[in-house]
Length: 218
Image (cartoon, rainbow, N blue to C red; front, side):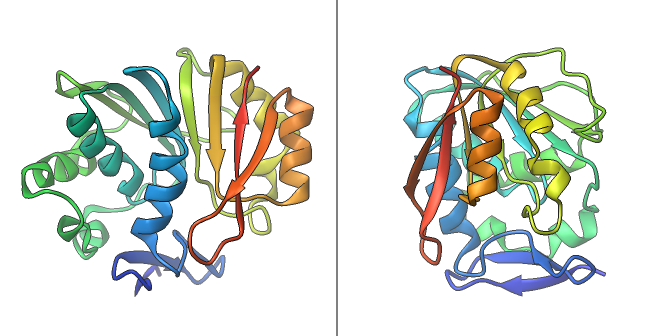
């Protein structure tokens, strides 16, 4: 059974005792998402019209933070979140993410979780949204993307998600100069990304983590 944990920046995360794995950094769920996926992913893009694929939709924190920044920066986003094990509404309602975002964006966060899976929706003119309930290993992508948030469980507990085969599949879904960002900077992860064709850069990590990875389809 999933457990709710408070991280060091006050934002909540979930703990999966079966995997002995948290959904976010215990040093700060909000800070981790903002640093890795927003600052070094979304805001590093030179485009105002961005297709995003998230591997590991999870709690929806990355999605709602992206939504909020899109409205602030006048970006147009096509957001696709892939998740094999969806969380139920009840556990999402116990998280404190409503305190992290503007009151005007709370309804959008709720809608992200209430929407049916595998259906494309227009949340507003700037944010097109779809969540896909599927296994990445088996899913056949039909769209292409500019940016990938790779936020699967860690390589120690889900090594198959960090394989060269998976990264080659994601490489193929990216547009030219597309970017993948992730929290793991392990040697094997970098090696598999390079094997897939990416140019890999190690960046400073958020609090509690020395490095993260940005990989570009060059």
